[in-house]
Length: 259
Image (cartoon, rainbow, N blue to C red; front, side):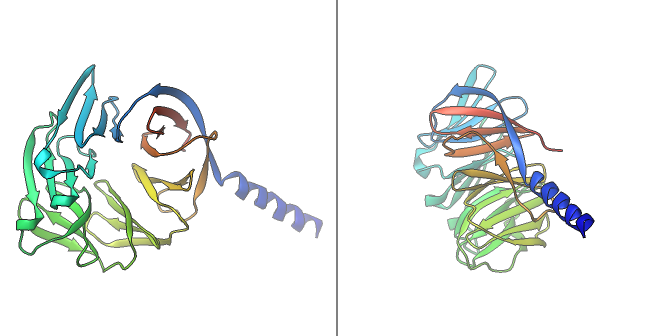
């Protein structure tokens, strides 16, 4: 009996020990922007300020602005040779090269069938992931051929975030977190317990709930809290094992030990 109690206590302590990941502070610097989009392996910094998209690298700062399309809603730099800018008010996506020159424009208002898009993310080749607000479905869209390569089942709950890489696409709604393959097949569906935003690195997810961050490994369903000092998390992003946290004034850098 005592041996059984010992094993129960041991496995309980082991489980608790594995429910958190420590983040070690590395650096901090002042920075002001509306939104920080990404920091790549070469420390190029992508950000939005006053609806202008910037790339800051090697002491240079180049930018792209399009006042005719209004406010810049979001940007995706996963493929730095095909950067996606989304102007939601005009239902338009602009594709840029690594020098921020426009190489393609997708005006969904002129496409047949018409698509009312609320979120976008990068796909493979000439594809982007879009959420069709009228049909309430995630679609893999080829902008060169104007064809929908894949469409998921309709989703009723409000979409909060959309992220992707060349292998997977993650859709966060108020009710669930969905994971899809690059061809649009549903891999998993996990109940959302209050998460409002997410970031990705490789096949790993970092999710935000209130003022706390959580880690979700590839193929896992249990969230691990990330141990951080008390600070304000307005925005976060991840590059390799580096976690960046931004409070609109300061960009803090932490090291994540991810096995």
